[in-house]
Length: 144
Image (cartoon, rainbow, N blue to C red; front, side, top):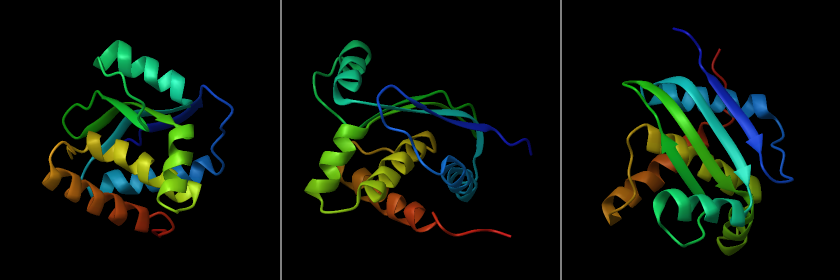
């Protein structure tokens, strides 16, 4: 199996530490869902940047923590995931969790969308939350 690419970009002053640790985790996440990684781009930005994307591409005039553009083909996950680090920071404070813990949740959330999970209904949201928790637990698990 050819290993795909996971890229991290920033449109603000946020830089992800330990990119390789996150990449390895995301490859394991995809594998646990019987998916392959093609090319996935995570773009970290601020609220205004993501609001503009929300308005221009989705006709939503609201702030959000994440927007994903899914270009998955079959079992090969591909797409762009935009994350507002400002919104992640506010959510972390609201839910009384560490910033990195909330960031992991949002990063996993985007990948889970590409795996086919939705969050429009209450039952879909509940399943998504369980999957997020399951995948966050995998973060430090190393496979030999």
